[in-house]
Length: 448
Ligand code: NDP
Ligand code: 2IT
Image (tube, rainbow, N blue to C red):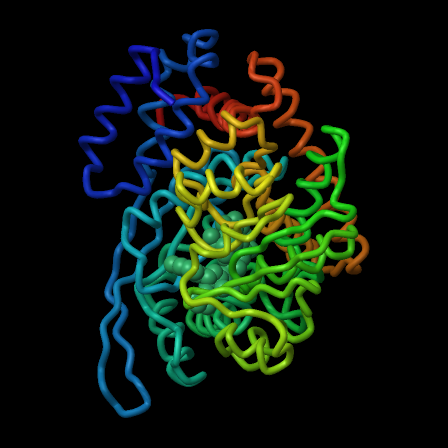
């Protein structure tokens, strides 16, 4: 995926140099720039307004100390991050990732992706992302609460319902959002929709929990229908077994597909009879245990150590829903060799550049993350609307709006891929559609 345009190439080189120790951020920028070549040739005005130089530099990055005490009284210190990437079209919006691998480069890649994703949702939300290298695994509820309260004690100085609205991501679910929300409210003495993904008794939206996984399947279904096929009777792999993976599995199954494998960071299960999602929910949502426990419910299923092996199982459709770069070039080739025709991304940037090249070279239908997984943040946007209006919509109302948004995101990807001469390249369509709205807003607001 070489870039020919001299201006874009030069800016990319400068961006690489300036952020040399942030490989994931550079990967995300490179992918977007690759798609923008035909746009830049038509839109010299955006170049003149310095939009691209500005769009690769976060408006603000905050890093802070997060001290907390474990159940034995030992003091720990983690590092907290919030990257407020772009507020051209709305308040900063994006999740909080709690995982030991978190560093500034990872949060910047996620924040950069979020800018374009949020633009695609059709809702007025800018892009941001936060997190910490805190590892929630094996911690007691009390330790999680101590950490979340300390994290919010500092973060609360920089966020607000009309300024920056965090939510969940890896390692941050309703429990963590609840603890953070409580601490924000206590310090600021105001009840506002400053976080989304809240519990249903205190301002959360129905269908937010299901939204990313359901939205992924709504998008994928549109892509399949537009190409004369459907989920019906298809064999599906879903990596991960967290929030996104569980509800992707549920919706794909309801569309008539058979999900035969899921995973966690230790290994994967293969159940040729179709995954028993009730067992997965019990293991992951209730007991917070490892996926190998699935064998207790279904001894006839297989468990294999390691995450990569899941991509060696023959399938029609792969839905990566765990983490970045989980499908590399080698895994992509194996998927293709085994007959996989569709890859649609629930996780953020789960495919390496080599994997994406393999999909495109082999004519796979490829649903890029910033479009395919936008249903989560879109429903967060709907939660913000409900909080502002001081009312709650029914599950059906929210789900119907989510479905409509995912349809319109697919249409934007399809329309823009055609308009810019790359029909069927939904990655290019998503990058261009997401970019243009933000870029025009940035130009209109002057050099800020
Ligand atoms: P969860 O924490 O609920 O689940 C994450 C899942 O991915 C777990 O099964 C976890 O396994 C696995 N996983 C995480 N890190 C790794 C790793 N380094 N290697 C292998 N497996 C890993 O997170 P979500 O389901 O919310 O997020 C999954 C993906 O979807 C992320 O990329 C996230 O950014 C993206 N996303 C999330 C949205 C949301 O609304 N939550 C919205 C849009 C995108 P284990 O438990 O063993 O760590
Ligand atoms: O990557 C994502 O879009 C999310 N983690 C959801 C963000 C949000 O604000 O709901």
